[in-house]
Length: 220
Image (cartoon, rainbow, N blue to C red; front, side):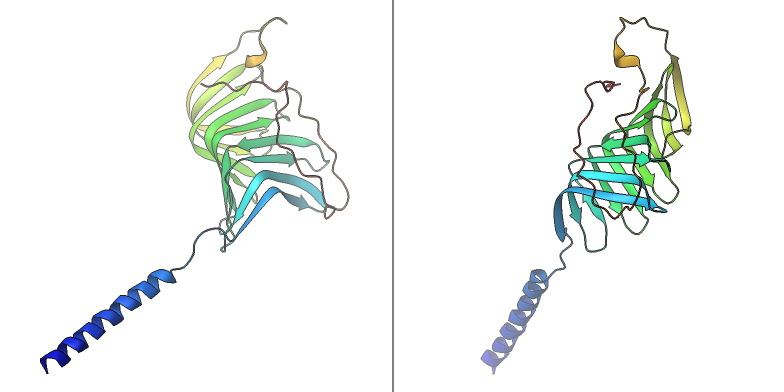
């Protein structure tokens, strides 16, 4: 009888161990379900392209979220097809539930309606509200001044903005033609393409490069 009880105990322990191994083996996978290279996402309104999102790599998850681990480049367009602003960052993540993009690492926004440049380490873009915002440090450079602070709310075309906690403003003195271009805000947009017609037509993939004459980023 003693050996019988030991046998029963051994079988129970073995059964529990097998159950744990089975649970670990079939643990739900939470990683990406698809990976794509050189992607382009187009947002349109009334058959007119308003936003083009480009990235060298995209990871798709089962819940509809997307990750752009290498880079992201976004172009914002006016209804007439001219480009109003651009957003560039080292990486980004899109959350489907909230329909919000989060750009991270060396974020730069350049506006052309009102020539100015924004630099930050984190920035959110909300397509439905056509807004960009952050709670982190920001540096904004225009033609005649540099403003800094923490937190920002702005239109996605960067035609207007509000720094939540301003920390200072530096007014730039006029410089002659021999001065360096580093302190100049962008006054001429990158070559734009007028986009009209059927947005279902496949557009050429965006090659994410910078113009040679684009102002250099200030490390500060």
